[in-house]
Figure 1 (tube, rainbow, N blue to C red):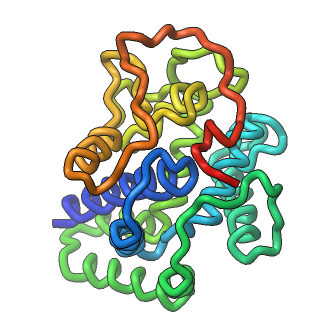
Figure 2: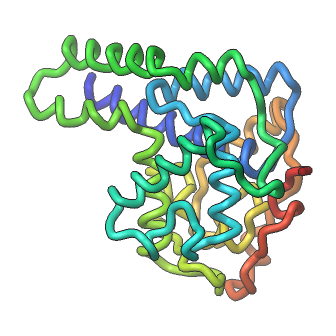
Length: 266
């Protein structure tokens, strides 16, 4: 039971982060009706629980990452961090500053992200995070059968930041490159079921507006498959269709940060 719970929480957490915070809040790769947006927002908050990521802060942070990829201004680049933990701490400080509005970002990074003040106030609060943490702990107390099972528990508390650290560390250090971008982005896994397609960092940095992060025939982006299903069910409407894999020429200049590449009006 512990294995199933951990695998389910891991998969759903990174899926909703990719689907809602990344591809919707930060890039607006699709649109949907207000009620559908609220439903997806609520599902994201419930799944992420104690590591809920505020859409506004996430979107701004991610847009900064694209604008300054692997430079000293990049909020989370392994090129300028000693180790993944150091990168996570620096990212957390930037994120908290944006969340509390102590840090004022450039105007071009603002706008276009979903807003639900009442929900955000609840899920960004410490009582909410502690409550979810207590629920995870009670589950382990009931179903953990071996002492080492408890080693998995801390990951539930910070699932969102852990996913972000994995994607940004390995996605800019390990793997292969399809595109000649000016940053250090790489595709870590050709079949990325671990992070729901987020580890196709080189593809994404080369084509930041494409809803499908896979670019070659042998690559698979699970989040894109979910988006295709939601589109067929008419729950979302894609802002643009992805480039077909057969048409990809794996040498292109780096895609620059523009309003059109974000698919967001500011």
